[in-house]
Length: 128
Image (cartoon, rainbow, N blue to C red; front, side):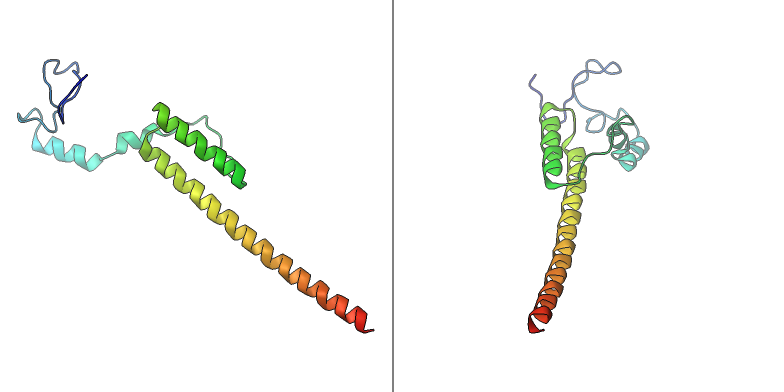
């Protein structure tokens, strides 16, 4: 179906009307109603992401984070998830990667301290 910008598919209230009410050259709704709709912004869209039965994503290691991102990409391509929602979930995955990297850094520091302590202990034993 070819449409011009700001055209919309027919809806029950205005079956013969080709423009959405917000971009209409005629005033289908008042300016106050338009301002109220603008103020609500994505309130309705934001509620669509909620999936009460969804479990927590497994983001414990890099492989699980990669699988999560691949699943997100597939959902966006299939139209099951908006790019806006996928962006929010990708930010969560990025935070998990940063936390994973920080944990690796902390573990590396601990291993370096342990190696240094063992090296000092080995030198002390070899001196005796």
